[in-house]
Structures are given as structure tokens and as C-alpha cells.
Image (tube, rainbow, N blue to C red; front, side, top):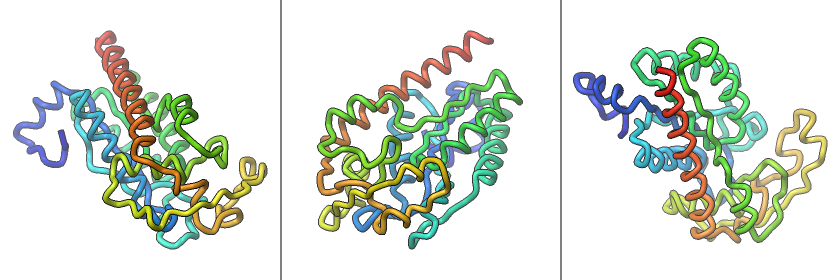
Length: 246
């Protein structure tokens, strides 16, 4: 159910029945020559729609801007601060709670948002202890990712416009992928990048962290389907926990 297409005469009853709101959160940033600037938005939005079908949740309009400090100097990237993102999410969460939602899922398509999402969730929990807030970023996919990838990850945490993320896009939003422009760029990311502010242009000129040429729709399907299964389970658990507290 897409929240923005409801009307105020009927939505109250539907909120009371569902009580779950999913907010797709992404970013606008460089993703190499073969993927669009809005890759993270597309992934978050299409994941949210699939998860909502399985949980009876409402999908809120996508929040399309995120904290992209590391890539802010690349052409096309639009950065907002963690403080701005936290404030917006807290305000939205308060409004959702007051409307009757009791499970708020922040479905994240951009790793750079993680710090802000966690802090916003903590602030909302402090205000409404009975409000279940989840911040989800492809949960529980480590094993299946290791099984399907053909190249070693450039970084223990990051994946970006590479074999893996491009596979996600081929599965969820293939019409926006131009594989004829896919490149191989496996940068040497210094250890210092994990412990001091490091703009990505210091180690990559493409914003691609791996071999995008190896991406396939089937790899994306295996990983994304596992992530969706885990998200559905986590949301069901949050709703059950909420019901037990009534």
C-alpha cells in the first residue's frame, strides 16, 4: 500500500489495521558510469514495495537525500548532514506515532545513512517506548553474498557500484542499468580510511569499488530474496512484540 495515494477519509482505519510504516531512504550520489545517481533510492523503494506486499505495511514516499560526505565532491552527489537527517526522521516518527502507527521501518539503501538512522531510532524509543523502530540495511546476507561473489570485496564493510550492488540493480531496477558502461575498478583502500575522515576521491576516481562487469541478475536475486525474507521476519517479530505489550 502506497501511503501517498490514500485519502484522509479512509486512511485512519487502514492505519489501525496495518500499524506498520516503511520509509525507503536512499541518497543521490555517484555510482560510476553504468548506474544512476539515484541507485540507492531505487533499491530502497523497490525493496520496500516487496516487503510491504508480504507484511501488509504502508510504504511512505521515498526520502531521497542522505549523508554522502564521502562522495560529496563527485559530480551529481547531493549531501545532507547527519543532524538534518536525524531531525527529519525524528519529526516523521513522532507524526507517524501520533497517526497510529506502532512499527516504523526505516529501510535504508545507503550505508552512509546508518549512523543517523540509529540515532533517530534511539531518540524515538526514548520518547515512545512502545514504538518499534527498525533500521534495516540488507540484513543477514553475508553468507549468501560470499557464496555468489566472484571477486573479493574491496572493503570489509563498503560495497558500491560493484559486482554486488550492480547485481541488486539488475534484479530490482534493470531498466536503469547500462552494462555496456560497466567497469572494473578495484581500489586499494588504506586502513586509515576507517579511522579518519577520508573523501573517496583519495582512492577512487570512478566511485566503483570492484568489478561491475561480473554483476548478474541471478546474483542479485539470490541476495535480495534472502534480505527480503529476513526483513519480513524482523518486521513480524516487531509487530508481535508490540502486540504483547498491549
